[in-house]
Length: 99
Image 1 (cartoon, one colour):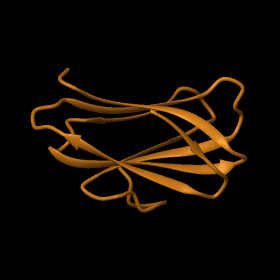
Image 2: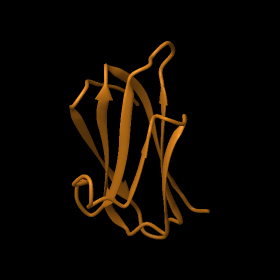
Image 3: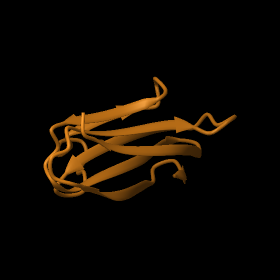
Image 4: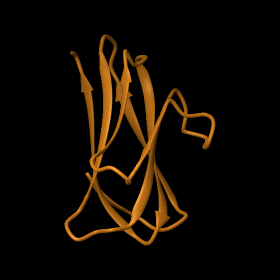
């Protein structure tokens, strides 16, 4: 999915994690000619509460930005994108893997 995020704003996405999966991986890349900075947070069970209540966090200093959880708990997981500077246009990919 492609999304845009403005400075100091947040967007939260809900993800269903089936039982028996070995990895939940969220990858964010920026669209062509975009330079805005962002942070990416992932949390199982409820929406991330930054800065402390997160299971994984990364930012746009190294692209692609990747958050991965090994042996995720079945149920809901939440992905939050936070704009740090300017407007960032992102491509988000969420994979729930069996390996």
